[in-house]
Length: 116
Image (cartoon, rainbow, N blue to C red):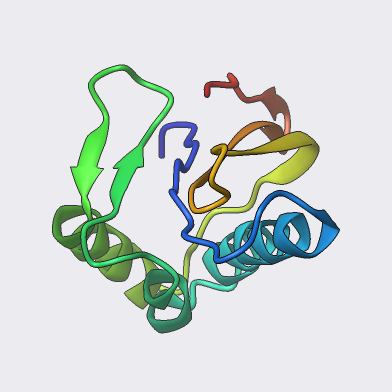
């Protein structure tokens, strides 16, 4: 599988603070956990209905339905994907209702390209 980076917009009801950063970090950590466990149900439950998944390849842009079809087929074989966090930065809009992140990750033997 190509190296991947997930971009998710998270709606939060409060401005940027430790609690809201922790909430975003928790979702991202769980995405990594469930993908490595090949737990498709829990993994895709973390995506909004209108989520868009971007991979590291410029051509990789999946709507949730297409990515879920791919992911569930892979997870059904018992194989997920595992990435290890090197660095992550979480950012919030001024009104605190939207969050985005930048992360650097690696998988065994390979550094993963980072994107915003």
